[in-house]
Structures are given as C-alpha cells and as structure tokens.
Length: 282
Image (tube, rainbow, N blue to C red):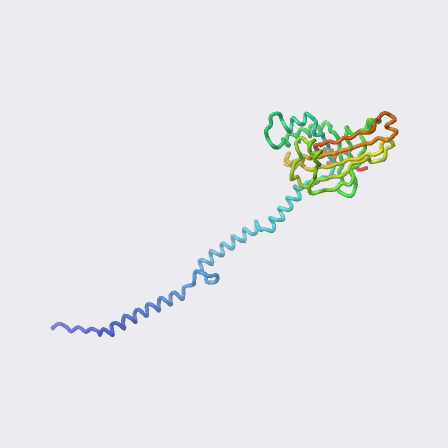
C-alpha cells in the first residue's frame, strides 16, 4: 500500500505562513532600523561624512586663499594706490597749442576719446628740452602753492609774475564753470576722482598792481603705464586777472589784463638724486 500522506490542517498552514511573514517583516524592520538615515542634518552615512570632510577641507583651503575680508582689504589698498594725489611739482602746457591738438585729436579722427597716451608722450618730449607753458608747486597740505607761466608776465619787467596758489582744497570732484568748459579741447573728463582747486594772487604786493586774482583747478584726466610704472596726465584751468595801479597806467601798461586758459599737466622731471625739478616753496 502507498504510504499515507499527512497534511496539516488549513488553520495550521495559515499560521505557518503568517509566522514566516511576521519574521520576514521583523527582519526587514530591524534591518531598516540599523541603517543610518541618509537624509537629515545629523544622520549621515560614513561615505557622506568622508565626502563632506573632503568638501570641508577643500572649502577651508579655498577660504584660506580667497576669503572675503582679505579681498576687501586688498581692494582698498589698490584704491589707495590708484587714487589721484594732486600734490607735488607739475609742468603745465596750454591746451590750445596747435601742435598738441594734432596729437590728441588727429585730423579725421572719429573716436570719442582723445589720444591721451600719445599726448602724454609728446608732453614728455617737450619737458625733456626743457619746454613748458608754466610750472606749479602744489603742497601736500597746510601751505600755499606757487605758479609761474610765461604768458602771465609783468608788462614792464618782461618777467613772469610770481603767483601764489591760495585757499587750496582737495575735493572729491572738480567743477568747471560753463565759460571755462567752452575753452577746453576736448571737454573736461568726467568721473576723474579727487582733484584740487584754489585761488591765484600775487605772491607779494606790487607797486604797479592794484588788484590781481583768479582761479586754479586741476584733475587727473588719464592714467597709463610706461616701463611698468604708473603715469598720469592732468587737465585743469587757471585764470589771472590783473588791474594796474596808477603808476603802471601812467607808464603806458594800460588798465590791466585778463587771462584764463585750460592746460595739460604732467609731473615734473626728476634729477639724478630723484628730486622733482621745478618751483620750490617760497
């Protein structure tokens, strides 16, 4: 006879399946419980930690070289170096000189900006001769400056007036009057940074002069580089109006003279010892 088959009751088989399913579910739950959460701020897997650590290291290295504070300091330092410093000795050249106009504004030029680089080089050639329309000394602070121009001269002596620059003040922006701007070739540059303005008057009283006064304004128009060093071209306007006293009038010098003109300026040449050549303080 064939062996008898023993089958479990349906209820027992059902319990067996439930028990197996329950164990499987618990095991799955236990496995999930032991796995660290991959989301969230605190629960990170070891691989995430290593990756984050490397990123932090890289971030630290980056911060070490390009942190915000050093960048700001470096920027301020660069601004200080590049800021205009309207003090020292300068050689002046009348802007209306025709041979200079051909340099900074060549015939047929359509560019909006003048050719400041070639103009600067042309002025240095004149300076080396030496040749200039005038010279000025602008003090660092606390004292008056000096000015001499070959076109502003004593009509009886034939020598340039010794002109004092008074009430000098460094300003954030130099403002030229409408009448002054019309004489500029080309128009004054904009957004030039700090400049200087003041008054012109005779350095000492003169028996042939009843009154002498005018204005002096100057700002940096261009900055370039020559032989790895910063160079500057300045522009400005000066006026000197003289009213003669009775003695000069009787001598035939007339009632006086009014003169005002825009000019280019470059820093004075230096001698073998590195000292600027030009006017000294009175």
